[in-house]
Image 1 (cartoon, chains in turn green, red):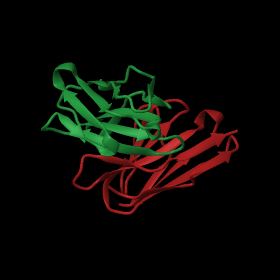
Image 2 (cartoon, helix red, strand yellow; image 1 turned 180 degrees about the vertical axis):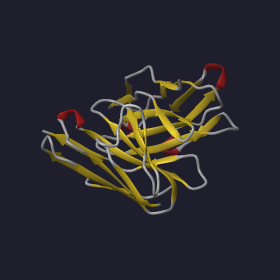
Image 3 (cartoon, helix red, strand yellow; image 1 turned 135 degrees about the horizontal axis):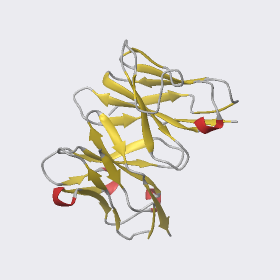
Image 4 (tube, one colour; image 1 turned 135 degrees about the vertical axis):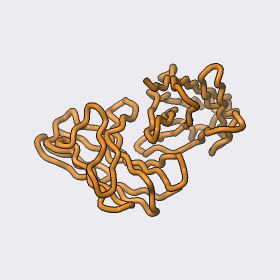
Length: 111
Length: 114
């Protein structure tokens, strides 16, 4: 069955430090991969997506993610975190037309 | 992308009652979905809302509990019936825009059942 694993439930980084959020997927075919962000009390906002082509994709708010087929991973990165990045981040994979989500990673930013 | 609105944004309801949540999108979409996010949890797909026909429910969700309508391409409703405290969750609709493979989400409806 298709699944998405986000191994880190909580991550705390200092403002200005770099960030990497991990995501691994289990899927038989070439996946469509997504990262969404959910700020407190808000819906989900699309950060970036990967369908094919260049394995390094750029998204909004200075985020990027790299698809590594050999590792079944799609990790999210940001070189310098801002306090406004504190939120919950969800990795997701499309299974047909359905989205399967990881458990989410809560990011806390220390000033 | 698309502008997606949901009503109500939040509600507090008594057990045994029902609540209908509306989802409206400002452009034509191919598919609409309803998700549940229980407290501290990730999102789980409830069903795919099909225009003019019965919704397609995921395992563990049934029509009697979560009736869904989609009378046209841009509007859908989800009803949470005979509510219990275990139904306290955020309910989100999402849409698949025509010509894309990307789902966009509404702001969610935060439901508390007492």
